[in-house]
Length: 230
Length: 239
Image 1 (cartoon, rainbow over the protein chains, first blue to last red):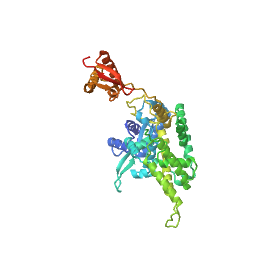
Image 2: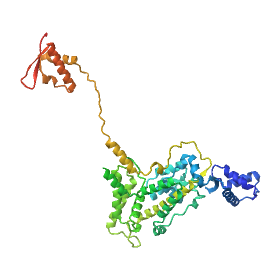
Image 3: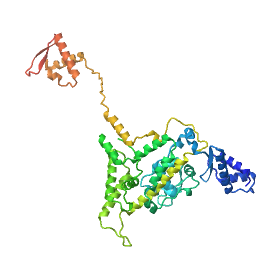
């Protein structure tokens, strides 16, 4: 691949609103400069790596993420605080535990019907499914050929973008049952460590630790509180 | 009174896993009796707080009781001649659920990580004043605090006295006419008889005043009655 295409690729990634796929980049270049141009998906991947290295060297505030089967520019995490102040309200809202659970199940089992989902969660999931459909994190692929022809749900590219994945296969694998049994508290500990590491702002840390304390309250204690005030 | 969804537990399976983890119980040897009791206590708490009990929780309560009963009966035997543990399906469901719950936690880390990256074109016109992070909005406060505060606010409120002013369409002139009409037939009427139909105090008072006015004007006279607590009003023709 000719080096002049480095900046062409950069321009295409920059100009694209959604992650642009290597196929789209190749098609654009070939459409203008001829089908015989030698350029592969691997070339584009290398170019993106070079660009990212250059951005880091220059201390640029942005980088190219490889997500949702393609490439997209994003500001670096260091500036999250300032950019977040101005960014759209809806992007600040985190997903609920129910939404994450539902997404995890759909991501691994897709395509999946609502009854299948609900039998795993053990809980009615109408509301959660609607929320996820609204957020465009899942979509309806079609109908299952089983009785009642229930709708089939799959995850979207928006889902990949949201979790920073290139493809669904990049998701960490759910642990096997034996593994879970061997190591009950692994994730619990990991969660604690990551939670304290993740929040950089002191203020947020404070809120987080308070929040965790609240979570540790056992329901029984809460019953007692309720009773004593009566 | 209060309709709230409990966010602590995403469903009956989540709640059971919580009990297992808290008491360090073996998922392959669940003490069904103990777990059922805990589960029912939780359901009662929900009912006590008048929260909506999801049908899923009731279904699980029924399932637990069914297993509990089966545990007491002689074990069924499968085709290989092995005993079937009545808890097997529940254990399978719990483990399956746990796998995905763990994944959802992983995904939550990924979400946190990705939230630090911002894409282009993300500045939209919207209100900035409302912080909407639940942690910020609900700083160190639980749903129970809200319920308690709300309940106290409702109960502590002293009943506000209501002063309703009702206009009585009763006047001294009306009551003079009324007394005259009573005297028309018989020319005398006992005071209590006169008052018997009157429900409102104000009407009795006004009638009494009307009566005094008539005595003063000399149109009626009063005399004692057989009943010592009463007296008789009689008309004086033409004053």
